[in-house]
Image (cartoon, rainbow, N blue to C red; front, top):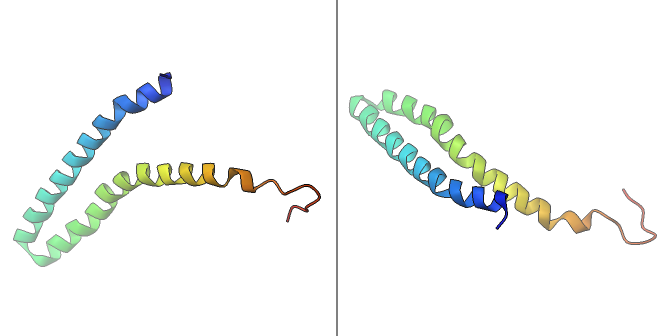
Amino acid sequence: MTRRRLSRLTLVPLLVSGAIALIWLAFLLLRQAWSIGVPEGLMVAMTLVFVVALPLALPVLSWAGQWGAHEHRGRIVPMAGGKVP
């Protein structure tokens, strides 16, 4: 097993547990803000979109970008005699 693959397999459980803890804390904070009032709940919800959703979305988006790059790699080179646009 390569070192890169071993480090990925080691970090995945840590990332998943960190994401679960972050979602749990965000849920507690949002519930507490809604108990104070609707404007406070909306303000906290907007903040949580950037503080929680963005860090959770970045690994997913980078994985999707890598997957898409591997899929289209062979389509860049034109067939013999073709012109590159």
